[in-house]
Every structure is written in C-alpha cells, then in structure tokens.
Image 1 (cartoon, rainbow, N blue to C red):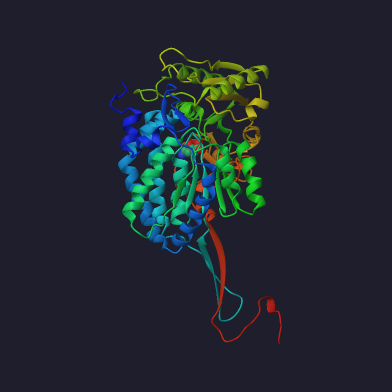
Image 2 (cartoon, protein in one colour):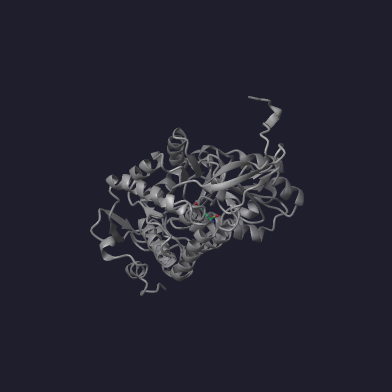
Length: 505
Ligand code: UN1
C-alpha cells in the first residue's frame, strides 16, 4: 500500500521548494506514474545566460584558491544534508522519474557515496614528482581547477549523475552549471536547495554561484555547450545528443566527458550458475523499466542451455509485479512517457520483421495507475544480431541470441556501436579471465558473474565507442575536472638546457 501521507506536495515542501517556485510557470511537470501534474515550474530565461556565465567565472576565481580539503568540507556537509533528505529526495525521484521506491532511495545513496568519496579525494588531488635530467632541477606535476563545469544530465538518473559530477567538480575547485533533463526539473530544484543548505552551513568562503541550475529545454543547454568560459562539459544522454555536443565543445577546444548510449550484453556460458544468472538478468533487464544506460539489452547464451534459460526467464517474467512504483512489492514501474512506450512497440515490431520471436512487450492497463505508460518487459529470441539489436531502445527489451564458440560470443558482444557495460556468467576461469583481457570485452565496464548495471561509485564509470569515452565517478575520473601543469624548478646557479642543447650568448 502506498503511504498516503507522502504526497508529492508534502515531499516538495519538506525539501524546501516554495509555492512560488512550483506554480505559475510555463513548464508543467508530469509524473510518469499517473500523468498527474506535479508542478508548473519557471524556465530560466535565455537572457539570463550571460549573467549566469559571469557569476560562474567570479565563483571560480574565489573558489579555486580555497584549499581543496576545505572545499571537501562543503561536500561533507552536502553528504550530511543528503542523508537527512534521503527519504524525501528518493520519493521525489520516484514521483518524477517513475522509479520504484527502493531504486529512488538507491539513487540518493549513490549521491551520498560519491560525497564520501569526494571528501577523501579532496585531500588526495595528487600530482607526480618526476626526475629531471638536469642537475639542480626538480620536476613535478600539479593539478589545478579547470574552471566552471557544465553538467547535462538525463531523466533516468536525475540526481545521481549530477552528484557524481558536482561532488568531484566542487572539490576540484570548479563551480557547476547544471542543465537537468527537461523531464525532471523538480529533483534538480530539490538538489539545488539541498546544496544551498550545505553552502549556508559551510560559511562565508563559499562564493555565490557555486551551483547554478538551468530549467528549460535544449536551447539553454546549447548556450552552455557553446560557452568558451565553460572549459568542461559533462553530458549524459543519448548518442544523438553527444554527437550534437561534442563538435561544438571541440571547436572551442573545451573538454567533454560524454556518457552516452549503452547496448549492454551478458554472455551465459554452459558452466554458469543459472539460478544466479536469472536473478542478475531480471534485475538488469527490467530494473528501472529498462531505462538505465547500463540496462541489460542483449543475452548471448550458449546453445546447449539456451532453451532452458529462456524457459526460466519466461517464468520469472510472468510473475513480475508491474504497476505503481510506490506500491510495496512492485518491481516494474512505468516508462517515462508515451514516446518511450511507442519506441518500445516499434522496436519490437522491427525485431519481429527481422525474424525475432517476441514474448511479452504489450502495454499493461489492468491493475496499474491510469495515465502512466506501463509495459510488460519483453524477451525477444533473435536469429542473430540484426539491425534493431544494435540500437539502444530505452525500454525493457531483452534480445536473446545463441552461440557455440566462446570466442564468437565475445565477438558478438563487441559487435555493436556502443561500448558501456558487459558481463559474463561462467565458472570457467579461462573464459572469465579472457573476457577481461585486451582481446575480450571492448566496454568501459566488464564484469564476471554479476549483471552489467548497478555499478558502485568507486570505479570509473563510462564506456567506449558511441558511449563517448568519458569517465565519471570514482578512480581517477577527477582528473577530467582539473588542468594539469608540469613544473620545472631550477635551484642551481647554472642554466643547463634540456637535451644538451648549447645556446651561449
Ligand atoms: C545511468 O543509467 O546513466 O551502474 C547511470 C548503474 C548506476 C548508474 C547508471 N550506478 O546502473
């Protein structure tokens, strides 16, 4: 049962959004759950952009000289505020993006995790010391703040992806200008409030304009992307969006961190623990209604176990609770909007015309809230990796293909334009280890005996090919938010030149 006390209005109020911010604007925000209007928010006027960019520059000048561990203190406070707001923000993610409650909360937990990571990082923005070839000289590498970072995020992880970027950017000394998806402005406004609370507690050395949030459609994003005063653009979304963003940023010699489409596969070998594989498949293929960039979309199964596995999956799919994502027990919530439902239906039609056999995939209207787009997840048995399998459709569609030879399976896994996440289920260590080698998976993420989605924040997140090549979140992804400087210091009384060059005057 739904907790009736936790209406979207109550949650928005708890999070600090005011009536003036939530009404009278031109942008109606609809919940994917039932199509109800959650608020009417105000767009950022395009004419405000010059002032926003100027404010980010001034904030940068002040923030870049605040010691990094002190900058980390702001993110520590942000983590505290997020802990306090976890239930409300998680519930708002559910209202605005249609996620089941546990996944909404999980997303906020991912924010808290990256804050913890970034706090530690704020004392570890290390450079190298390098041996100089010249006597009496020392060399080192220093990392400096890059400048304002433009963050473009998608509806499906409306808050976590912002936090991966913002937590790192802020400890690295960079203000953030955030352009969230036009489908999820409320969670963005809520995060902005939470951030402001942390800033208030932090004190006077936080300049105004450390975080500025743009509400509106693609035009605001276009201005941001084209602005030479924003040296780093971190964009998450479709490959189509990335193709529009990357050349504009390259043209002005800015840096892009792109996290674009995925078409993630699992290879299931004959030795696999099938019971475990089924659980991993179902979570990664139907979790978030197939709307993660890491969702499992392709299953490459050894032909000797293919029939058995499909049978088990069909049984698991038949029992999936589809419906109101805020009701206890629901595992599959709605797609984000009608267009997403239509895209799923036409992808299934295309697969059929390519020789596929579709199980499931119909629109569900019984036992679900009216006004939302609820689709039964689909399993599609394909004769091979045809055109529609190579495309990313943001919906719960799982294409199943067979293989006989492990090397062929790896080739199939790699034979798509995208390169985000991948995995193998096997108990054969030769297969497992070879999947992780130079001749194995070509993706940014490659796993053994776990699914392709649900990555932890400690590792670098991102992928190759049409996924865009960017890395966010853990490991040394912070380096993309800073500029590298090589320093040579001469502490001798001579002036020797490198490479033995003589130039006596
Ligand atoms: C995304 O879908 O854009 O690994 C991000 C995962 C999550 C993040 C997904 N931690 O599935």
